Length: 208
Image (tube, rainbow, N blue to C red; front, side, top):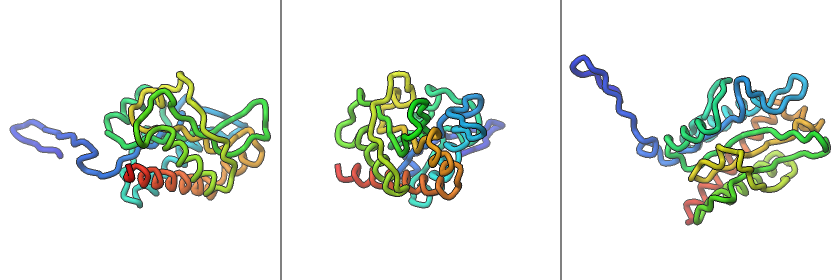
């Protein structure tokens, strides 16, 4: 709330959890001068922003408050994204990325990274990663490449104390997925799959 009194502006910042029952942070990977994977004119940072925006709309339609770590094409460090997520008191974070394999162009599908060093009792990182991986692969009728431990250099995943996962939604290095990842219809399907994974995650959390 904002109150103007005695020539002073008072701004009261409320905890999002006081306003919303369910809060999710969506991270569109890369941004600004950090392009991510690039193939000719196809750029990862643009794909992740499109999916993040679509996913945000779908979550809001399901009464889940969605916050974006970036809503425009700008640089934002992993540490700043983690700090922002913690300030939102979110239930979980989903970071959206695109894969690229320089050695094997036949690889395709979804793979999901999580922090294996930080164990959250009940519903944690691996459970969230599994929900997202399976629902996205099912919705998009694609290959589930599996769950992988995030490297220590992945600050965003490593710095959080809430369930978090990085979903790589396809391979720019694969000819078929290169075409699909440029399709608005397919990216909408990706957002639907991620939304389904988040809804399943909440269902499992509520059963704890």
